[in-house]
Image (cartoon, rainbow over all chains, first blue to last red; front, side, top):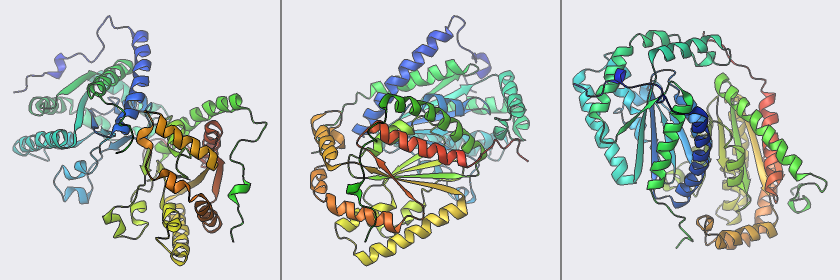
Length: 248
Length: 248
């Protein structure tokens, strides 16, 4: 039984949290991130993998747009995972993931990830529980490989929104002509499976936490972006990087 | 005989060109580019390929940093081409290029490109003139394929710097600890081959101009960035895109 219960975790910033102050902080963090990403690229000793998971309309695209746009695109890559192709399905589920893991010096952002193989697949019962457990074990081994054998820092974020906030955002997608292209017919059908998704996520957090998850209250975009930018900053600072000097 | 003579083309902005005014224009252009790139991504009917060529230290990295950072990294990808790997060399020279051409909805930036296969290779006489001519024909056919069969807009930029400006920038790379990682021992050796490179470029412009080159005066970064941002803006505006509405 999972020990984390998502419904007990707030989807909003703490009550006394100041929005304008936080936005100012974000600006400062983004400047530092730009510098550190340049250093990461110059030094090329470490790789960074940022995994974004969350329900439809939880704001994954917004994080990419607002947190990662400030950095040099030469060293920041984004991969969005959709339903696997026939070729991808003819390999193990980590095959398509492995080929786009970050090389040293770069930040790779995953918009959805290998976790879909124990989330959407599980909710729809395309895989049974036994297979899901085996996959979670394989995921742990895989993440350890990246950490130990390519000096990869892995940051895993779950964007935690409330079902009410999701519904509002999906309705906005239908009514706003500039957002209609993001809407899929099955979005509301998927939303009905909310509780099943929450259970599948909780099981992930329980079983795939060797690299810990950050659960990000995501109903307010400014708070969500602050938490992610701040977490990334701390992780990059910890790498203790320096410019490498002239090549030997 | 090539009709373009690079030494007759200025590497600087026209004399009466106002720097501060241009910088303000760039800011405005980048905002528009951000909007149009979002529309390109939403509509997903066109692809854009930006090719950056130029001598060492001509400022290709700077263009990527200053022009393309303003756009959502989800729809902007950068590929830097280095010396080909053994696997890449066991294929035709366009094989490694083709695999990273932009899919619809995205902008792909090439930092160096397939043109190196008729530039550095030719200057060092790794390929003879006859092979180079055949390659240029193949490049024209390839670019036509991308245009006709994937609705790809191709923008080719040559960053035109003077040998004096290059020398100054290479020296700066040696003396500035934050730039030393960019310096390669052979950079000054390559610089000695300046005239051979200019000839090879001129031959490219002559033979591979079905998709026209833009020769960008690049001694001043602000002017270089203005020309590229402005050219990209005009190209995107020409696509006459609109939000696609709800999926059918």
